[in-house]
Image 1 (cartoon, rainbow, N blue to C red):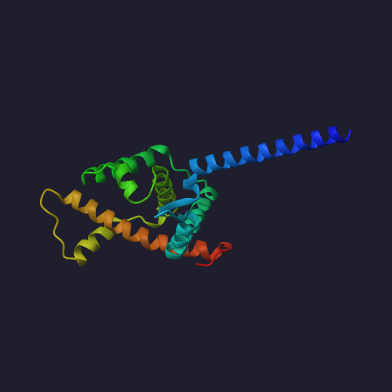
Image 2 (cartoon, rainbow, N blue to C red):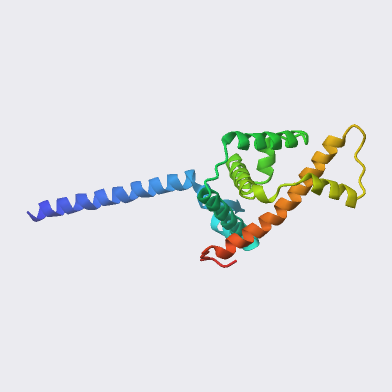
Length: 203
């Protein structure tokens, strides 16, 4: 009986050791396959952890990034509350315009995004939030003909002959952008003032 117990106990130890060896192998393989999740780089064999990189990035720009994310969430929430929806065709039109602009600089959209450490999804999210804000403030950024006339008079501008309509359109766009910037700053400041924002990390 004692021999039987010893035999069973011995087999269990062997099985447990085999399990540990197998587990160690699996962990080693997974560690190698997904080392990029934990190690950002090595210098002469000494590792630099991703946590170190993230910590440095947070120190350098964590506050600005967090503030942007808070603002984005507030705008998204306000758009949802007001029932504002941005159609896909509007987003596509902006993306096409951006793509055309970067193409004139000899780049593709993917290359331009890569240089800014952005993905296309990041850009789409930014465009969507921008369009939501434009729709929220649309009533406050209207530019009347009188505004255009006043701007031209005050700045003593003379529209080129045969291009009067285009000239006025450019002035209108400029004035609308100025109004939008001012109204957006006021609106976002007001939103942040009314919102309950809990910060759990200090930068």
